Length: 329
Image (cartoon, rainbow, N blue to C red):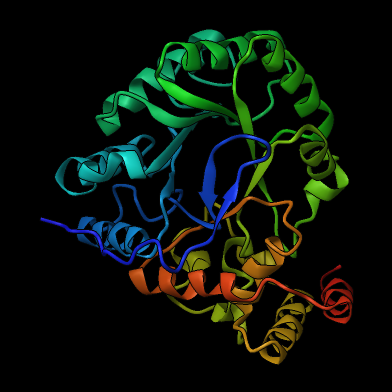
């Protein structure tokens, strides 16, 4: 039987999520990759144990995480049942609905029908009575925003979720959604968006500013740009890299010679800070306090330990920030 480290809260930093009462660890564990049916279950267990033993209390999922869709939730549910469930009140568990999950018109996007049915399915797969955060996973251009937000509010009112979140929303739409949820007295507290040195979308679409203005938290996914902001690709594409073994999200054609040179230059800046490139990339996301937590993915426990080191140095000089911008933009 797994027993968590008694020192699990000594290393991690915890940040209040916007103006809510909830604190999140500076580093959270995302189960987007490596927790599906193609993964090794014992490795999944050890990744989760290593994370929690070092203060990572937040585990982030979605209905479609796999492959196959739903399998990450099933595997995590098994880990909860066999090991981590005894610490349920110390854990923040989140899931989402918004991308295609099952066939037909009711298994995608943002209808009330889809969101509430999906949440019930997610709870069943994980063996939970509630999740801490339930997100709408992406903006829906056809469903009225009031309907989607009403579904989130009902999820919370029913006790099946404690907080509501939005993912992949832009600033303007997020503010409209926040106003609707405020009227419904629904605790919407967090935005989950892609953000990295290579992807500044939330700075351009108003989300980062809107979150600060409305007192909402941000949790950043893909902070390492699918592994590009690590030492994996300094000398080209390794045979066992995600590009070679899983071509769903990162493609070989994106790794141009120009991009490789950017990665090498950023690695040099990181070395000057006494960090690895991955540590610097994570630290950069957390640098100004606007981002509550950064989501990491891990294929082995050692990567969790390496990534947590990022919280030891999140301060950047103006010169360092200018160098990073000049290289990456």
